[in-house]
Length: 458
Ligand code: BES
Ligand code: MN
Ligand code: MN
Image 1 (cartoon, helix red, strand yellow):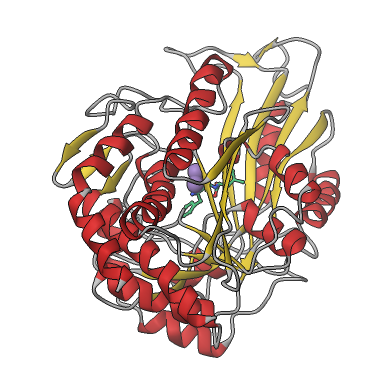
Image 2: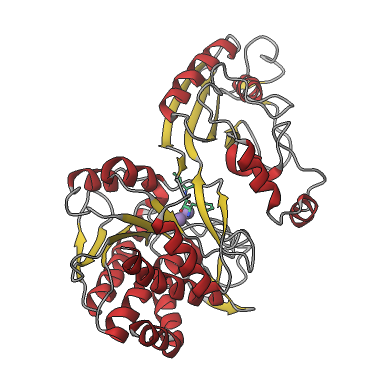
């Protein structure tokens, strides 16, 4: 059978696949940093050329920002069409000091490949590219139709992909989508993710006097914007971990009993989770377990805070400006725009007198929940993961966000299989990002078998 030829091709090309992944990772495609724009384009060209070299029709699509890579193979009439999404852009590597090896010099330690983008998302995205190659070069043809959509602005929340998808619904028409940009449940426990959180991200700027003041001469007589900002930020969440914005929970989908039971069955130890993080206690919303908090309850976190003096030694300043970046991770069926409206009302009500404020809505993404019960594509993915990883997946949710999943659903009308090959401790977005090379090869095999299973499923 052809699948044997595919498996044989995978076995014979392990080294080559790793070397190609390293070459892609060496290109510092940091989408947020304009100095890297030529590199970001080079990464797109690398992916396009690789897809073209195995016989797909591949192109670079120009946008107002970074280009999109699109490639297709539609030579399997009567078979389903799978849309494969990934991103070739990466987060900035900074801070550089904690990296044990340079972020763009992929280095293997303990079977892990360390580099920026190793897991998020170059390594994971590449598994599908190599699976397609194994079919085309090992077996002569793909068993299904595939469309690759690999973007370069995922990490900056660019609006260009949204535009492209909205304007190319026919071209992107498909029966199902697959994304590998999440994690397994734990080492040795592969997973299918059926829920993602949404996001509402804000910047708040508070202004007091028109200049910095002496905190002795003026202190106590005028409002301090940093104090005022602290009051606002503190008012958003109570000591019980509940968000105190009126109406915030109105649309929150309740955790159902069956789901809480399923979460509780997963092999997760709160004690080990705490010990790994070296914190003296876990903290979260009262009445929920850690997995429930991480996966299915909305959260509020301050992401950055500035104002006044934070250099060496004391400075008795009463600053005139303060600011913060903070965000809410949302769950179904919350709407990030509505959260913005409620937040505005809340700030207006709690902001102390004597300062003015400005709120900027920076990012928004909807939460995702996909139906997995009784779906042939999900059953195909279960079998594919068994083939690649040697055991069936567990079903889990995830606290991160992948905005394109909502887009695929609303614009193309299809659900997405979230087949993550990463691990929770892969340090994505942080120093020493890594991707396990055994998982890389297992992921390629799972993807190759997914293509076969989807052909059967039809
Ligand atoms: N690959 C991540 C999403 C992710 C994060 C999956 C954590 C699994 C665990 C993706 O590249 C990402 O960083 N998403 C952003 C989205 C945001 C910029 C809209 C996120 O979740 O912060
Ligand atoms: Mn990603
Ligand atoms: Mn990311």
